[in-house]
Image 1 (spheres, rainbow, N blue to C red):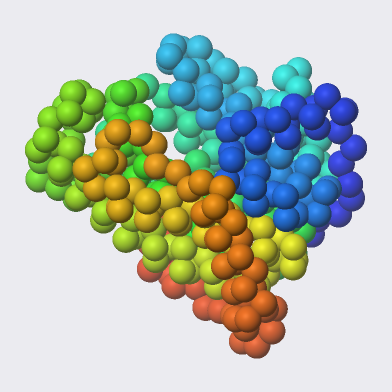
Image 2: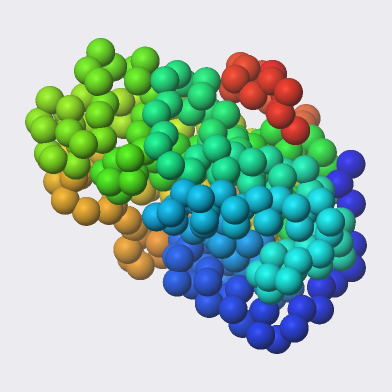
Length: 316
């Protein structure tokens, strides 16, 4: 059982910096976060700032500096203290809200492995990677949002996977420029070499886009599973997370609709789209009994976690 209590009183500067980081770099999450209770929104911002700092390190241009910085964070998670204000704020949050640190350790370990060249060969590798960088955050968010029932964790894991698959589908060109290919090679017979993606080779880009469509279809299955777990969230948190899920899922739709334009820049959902998906989320939360904490609990599909065997919270 996850039991979260207490309030976190962070230094004003840490609170302000966390909110600014979320506003600048996590626009969809910042939008959805306005629907949370103020304390929960602040806690979510602190968590996001921690994850963003680690991700920025992994994306640094110097692999040795990236690995050293991430190793420092990993050691701080073991010691429970850090001189870095962002990491320190997260550790304080974790202590006062009784957040499990194992997901944070898995997150950092995954990012350390992600430094430098990346080539994923199989769907299982992709799903385990998505778990490592996103489902871990979903587990931590359960604590931030006051979720008490451990039955919610598999569905939180699924939402993390769905969102990360959407990210990967959107950022193929940006990742290729960093010598990283997250699309599973087994999904196509054409070698997905990043230099050809960046150079605009037609055959390579066509093959990559075909895999993107496969990835987004798989993401859809994880979004639908995640929907079943919304009932475990408190009311305002349910609306916020459902909004974030709808906005993120819509990014995948934008990728698919752009077709040949997909390679010309990052796909996103504008303010009008965010308003529309917020309205959709509110309507669904009010009108669909599946989002209410009543009736027979949902049964998680174990097939979705076959690739995640042994990972915290997974149910293969």
